[in-house]
Amino acid sequence: MAEGSRSSLQRRLFGWLMLPLLVALPLLGMALYEQVQRSAQGWLDEGLEDTALTLAGQIDLRSAEPRIDISATMDRALRFDRQDDVFYLVLAPSGEVMQGDAGLSEVQPLTPMQEPGQAFYGDVRLRDRELRVVQLGRDCGTGACQVMVAETLHKRDALQQQIASLVALSGLGLVLLLALASWWAIRQGLAPLTGLSAELERRDLHRLTPLEAPLPRELVPLQAAFNRLFERLDRAAGAQREFLADAAHQLRTPLTSLQTEIELAMLEPHDQRLDPMLERLRQRVMRSARLAQQLLSLARAEDRTVNVGQRIDLRDIATESGQDWAHRTLPSGVDLGFELEEAPALGHAFLLREALENLIHNAVSYAGPGARITVRCGSSLEGPWLEVEDNGPGIPAAERPAAMQRFRRGSSASGSGSGLGLAIAADIAIRHGGLLELLDANAGRGLRARISLPPLRS
View 1 (cartoon, rainbow, N blue to C red):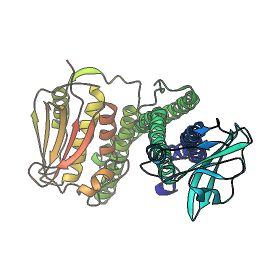
View 2: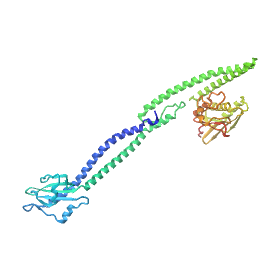
View 3: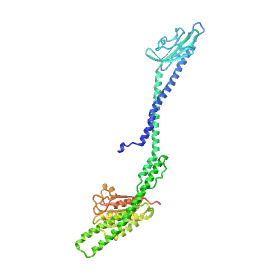
View 4: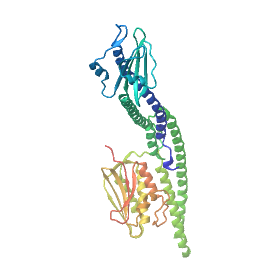
């Protein structure tokens, strides 16, 4: 499955968390809007009712007929409003206009007559103008006087828009806040899974120890499953190493004996025409013996029971290799030199010598006649290092990662190598927590194979 088409667990969790929120929040917003808007309308209606009660209190019942007298000052006070036009009307029980705007009696729909102590609130229309009206019934002795107060809807509409904007902005802010909180919470919740993935990414056949990082309870079964898998892989890898080591050991002895027999046969009187065939046979047996030795080295490099924490000096390892190669027959014109410095390190001397042996053998085999090969070791702030440099044809930069894989050789490689030398050196370097790098030679032409080890802690 392509990376872009894979479903993200984080996005899926976020989507499932936000879905009910996006569904419920508009409903809650509408309910909140209705509640706040109803409360605001009630407050404004109370203001109208207070005005109506003030007017009702001005009705004089001391005479035979009720009457009301509103001064100009009081009229302006009753009608004062910064945003809306205010109208009022007082009707006698007979329906006669006692005071106020007579046209207010023409509102549509017509408001019902109210008994004393009762009140009516409603929205009406007067000459294409929307009004909010309150109508009170006032006991006037011979019947109920009607007190009406109405106002236009400008401040109510503005208040309604403000409430809608406030609810919408509050809802949007709440959505953003909850979205950020959900995203952060999901990331924090999945962080142990990310750490587990990173730890698994660092594992290989050289590191199959159980996972011991503290994890949430839900991930403990997954951790246990991985640990059981590592245990099975460790047993399988161990069986493979044992088989490889046993096979290589069983092959090495008869191959060495066969090589000796061939060399003795070449020394005995024989038909000289057999010399080319015997030489080819000897070379192939030598190659097979070398391959068996490399397979044995490979098995040792993967053996996790070997202690690679011994204090050693890479200079001693290189010196021993130099003494060993001094007794070997090198190809024509090959110059093998050593530039050694003190390089204390932690490791396994035999394995590191095997790695160096393979690097030198690789350089001797592929650098060609007349090659100049230099073995160096030293130490820097990054740690101790060991390298073999030659001035042969080298390996193209694009092919170097593949050249360190088992049974892989560069496209320009000559000779009869098996493609295991660099792979063995790389495995031994990794086994020591280090790295094998294939670099350009210092002189320009050739190859420099460098093993870098972790710095020695004091």
